Length: 227
Image (cartoon, rainbow, N blue to C red; front, top):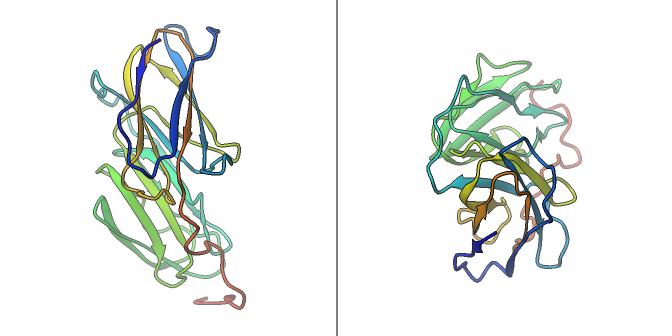
């Protein structure tokens, strides 16, 4: 298995590529890529968005895009980080007993869902790649991130900092990692990887994170607003 690593910005502490022994992982003729993300203190990083971008070209979408959901529960967006493919629609059900006003001023998608309870009028279609930052016009601490990508091969790390991307056809890929708290959130960590047919591989990424700037949970005394 052959790999190469592009030069990265100083924010990235280290990047290494590991190859696992051959095994029966993934579907026949396709491979599984396992990614582990750690911070500068070697702690696992949750909510890291991982995208495998094929150098041979991104295939045309087949069928309809999935319909996704970001809930509003206890005055917070759930999940706080979501990754979708271009063209996917997201519904924003409000499961609180107060009204929320969801909005985004991001270039990749600008929209507003004025004060409402339950379901808004309709889902929002995310038709351009990029990072979309969500907020609530009433509750300033509510914030979420939607990563809209073109490749169909992507995932998000869990608490252990791990994610698996399955059914990767053989070929060369730029594996990109994003995180809302990365020192340069708009510039991903990248590693170029060559994947053989049905050959599992594993990448370990180590990136520098900024301290959390604000809480995503409601402050004390923030109950009963805008019933």
